[in-house]
View 1 (cartoon, rainbow, N blue to C red):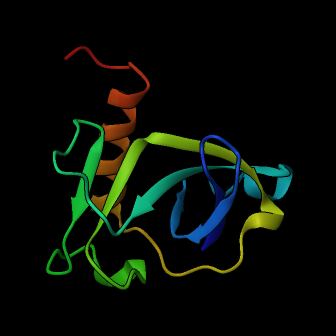
View 2: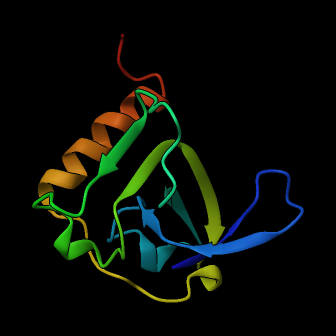
Length: 111
């Protein structure tokens, strides 16, 4: 759980996020690259979105309370002090899928 700022910086909200900074770099850095997670999916998913249903095998380890959408185009570099607690972990399959969405969001693949 992290205090995630609104994109216009008018306020913030505590919400789940996936830290995409590699584990071995976290002790060396003050800031973490975080991927936005929402329990309110948009009307239409983007190619950068990953909807994770509660029935998915990867869901159980996440610690999320409900089906959620991982929005790879919504990244934020946030100070570690904004992290309030760890909910769970992403398994290898989930991380691979998130990585594919990140490559799309960052323009690292041709579509």
